[in-house]
Structures are given as C-alpha cells and as structure tokens.
Length: 291
Image (cartoon, rainbow, N blue to C red):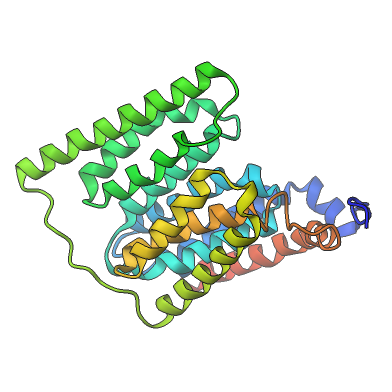
C-alpha cells in the first residue's frame, strides 16, 4: 500500500471555525490549565503549582516540532503530568521539574533548528544544581545529545559540545558550593507505589516497545535517556517525574512523530484535534470554576 493514500484532508465546519478562532492556542492554554488543576494544584502555593505547570510548557515546546499534532502532544503532556503528580506534589519538587523541562526544551529545540536555546543551558543546569542534588540527572540527560549524529554544520556541532561542556562545569561548580555550604542533604528515596507505580510500569512498557520497534531510526540521546531514567525511577517517585518527560520524548520521536505513525489513522487524528480543543476548553473552564 502506497504511503499517502489516506493523507487527503478536507476541513469540516468545526475545523474551519476553529481555525478562524485560533482554537489551537486556546486549546493548548486549556491543556496547561487542566494540568495545573489536575496534576499540580495540590502544591502548597500557587507559585509552586505554576512553576510545575511551566515544566510541562517547556516540555511541549520541546515536543511540538516532532509531533506537529496538538492532540498527540496533549496526550503526551497528560501522560507526563500523571507520572509527575506524586513526585512533584508530595515532594514539593516543582522547581527541579521545571528545570528538567527546560533541559528538554533546550536540547530538543537545538536539533529542531531552535539553535539559540542552547545558550540558556548553563543557567538552567546551574540553577538545577542550586535547587536539588538531582542536578546530576539533568547533566546525564543532556550529555547524550553530543553523541552520535549532530547538526551538519561543523560550527553548530562544535557549539553544541562547547555549550554542553560549559553547562556541566557550571552545574559542578554550583553543586560544589552547595555542598560546601551544607545546603544539600542526601535525599530520602521514596519508591513509587499505588497508581504511580502502575502508570510508571505502563509507560515503561510503552517506551520499551517503541525503542524496540524504532531502534534503528533513533539516535543515542533517545536510546539512552529514557532507559537510564526508567531504571532509576524504580527507586524514587521524583525520578518517575523526570522519566515521564524523557519517555514522552521517545514516543514523540517514534509512534507519534508527525502525528500518529499510521497513514490510515493520521487524517482522523488531524480532524479529531479540532473537536478536542473544545472539549479541553470546557474541562479547563469547569475546573477553574470549581476550584
């Protein structure tokens, strides 16, 4: 069967109205509002809840050039939010979560032609080292991006290596200062349980399946990050939150690349997203009114 047979798309009335009203922007704002209330509103302050939600915004900015489908991207954001709930809310881990999302934003963006984002990385990892002993996971996440195929321009490849190296040094320097000041105590591990454990197992299974099926097309950064964080996540629910981000990056690069990886289903997903925007808007409004 030739590819593209099912690619013909005729906008219906809902899509035409949605495009005129810019519902893709309204819909994604509604997605983040829904995440704020369902995943992160249990934090003690509005600022902490907003900070954690900002982590999902940065995650979306790192994913959107891959999926190019707001419905698939929203599904991935909700999955990441569900995995993050226990670690972020119960451990008051909003700032590290946002900073890890910024790592995704910077590194995935660099490979999606948003080159200037890499200049924020030293500040991001430096802030991560100041905020949490888990900064080492942020460094471990960005390092594989210099392994394997990089930008074709030698200058861009060199810039990538230099900025990742400077960022790692900045994180080490800040972490050393924090240790000298006695600011970082060794964290007490909180293994995932209950719903979080079930969600973690389901995401690990889905990610493992995508890695196996798409292994040849994936680069080192996608082959390494999700499995490493997935193993570590078994020991602490905060790492489950970070694994959720790395896992949805893999899903966005495989089964959900450029929408869903199916010629038959892709047009249906494209049509369904215009209906989804109205549903998620109503959900967000309902949650805001009932808060």
